[in-house]
Length: 341
Ligand SMILES: [Zn+2]
Image 1 (spheres, protein in one colour):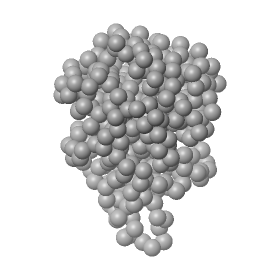
Image 2 (cartoon, protein in one colour):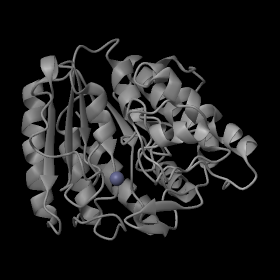
Image 3 (cartoon, protein in one colour):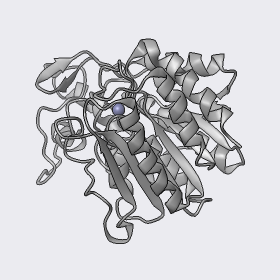
């Protein structure tokens, strides 16, 4: 299996983040990617560095102003005042009205929550993370049947013009949009434990990219304001966004009952290609997870995703229990490949 990863994806080193009233130790750390890279190396997969395909694929799903902010914010932040912290973080969240005068106002707009500090290397890491997804989509379009984009930092919470939930650039959405240049209908299936609100927002009014997300119930759980069953798309996209919130504390079997309902819908959509947004944070021991998927559950997930029988780009999203990432990845990929026709 072809894998894309760039070593600069390891450079983003968040120092802290704000969640539920507390400053916390970063969980979205470079070791996540190192562990996954080791796992796919052990499996004998072909690992390549992505080429630089530039900003164009990113501009297809994000605003230019937002991308410019991500690229320039840290430099302008450091130049603004000597008593500001060394990462761009906002304690002010204002969408409208916001005149966007000055980097503090931009941070108030473009950072949707307290979990996306921007350091000196954040743009570089996020850029190459997404270039891995671009390369994976292009490889699929060139004839590969399945490709893994080992994205880090993750992307599915990144909106058209806002970072959130450890995510800066929505690699899953970039890959799906790129696949549309060859494939008529593209399905995004996301089983990360958090609702993929960025991906949903980007494709919400479109019938050509269906987004289906299975995740822990967002009531009092990130992203808290989206991911409910009554969000189903708008305009021409009505019916093409679907959410399957799983009750907190759910067993593995309950989780997979929701996955099966998602797969039934996916088959009805009859897509030409799949982007599978893959989070390991559904694992029972993951520090983020309120659901209880076991190590063997990842083999079950791999088999179920393979059963769709579609050309597939797998994009890495969350997963924060470092000790299990490698073995869970081996479970998933072995079962996925073992069940491909
Ligand atoms: Zn997640």
